[in-house]
Image 1 (cartoon, rainbow, N blue to C red):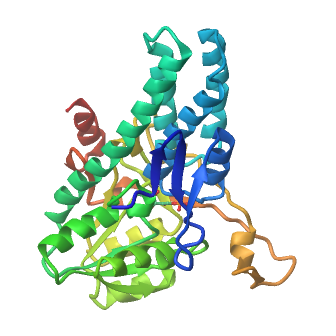
Image 2: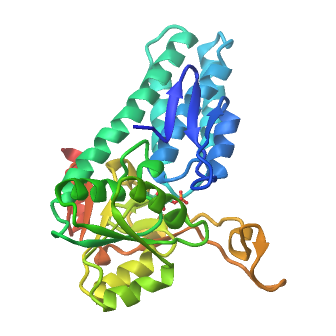
Length: 346
Ligand code: MRU
């Protein structure tokens, strides 16, 4: 299995997701600054994938400080690199989760030398990288149990192998369901403005031989009203303690339409996407992206000059629309305050 992000010989190999499906290219990320740019420019994207990239970014930053002999100075400089990496994208909490985990490891390491700390950071980054795939497979198995036989599943954005290290969260559920039942089908939302659904999700699913139909974002209500969708599963970028969930812009509309048509709406996300430090979705920072993503398609302007643009990358779906949150610890149900607390204590 090709990993979207992989630590190899003191650098990170990464699939350039801005070029798929036209070009499949692996790029080398050699410095913490290159990692910052790769995350910001979405060469790597998807909450778990940017989390692991952040963890490796810390290791790259630590390698840049290899000649530092004083451990306190090393930690001070590493802390600045961690804050810099975390500032590359604000919404997906997996990034801060992984970077903070790495910094905590460096801080508490009993290693006497800077080289020793760097070795531990690299090893931990590789551990998190491999663990991500295991977690996704567990989620896939739990999720597959609630997918109805022969279901047509609707998904939004890309929560697949590319958005993680491998296998995927929402697409992990699809993959596990397909392994059990070859008759399932997928409807993939195009996902404007960056078209992760059209470019990445269809790329993954067609490769797996899963029957996939691409629709534009505005079509989901129509297909639900026609009884053509049985199940919705999407990923998440940050989940608050009460279950409110931030995911790619357009997810909220989908959840409301699903509720109206009694179609179960599920989130698939690892516990690292749950931010227990915040009470509700109101506290989730929403990334505002480059306006050119809206005004232009394939480099060509598609709207009048002078028009106003707002381009939030994410929206928040209130917990009341969510049938369940599929995690590696099982499927969490309402009241989410309780089920989330319980999952963290397991
Ligand atoms: O802006 P992106 O492409 O990073 O947004 C990705 C999403 O919203 C995904 O649905 C989410 O990160 C979950 S990925 C397993």
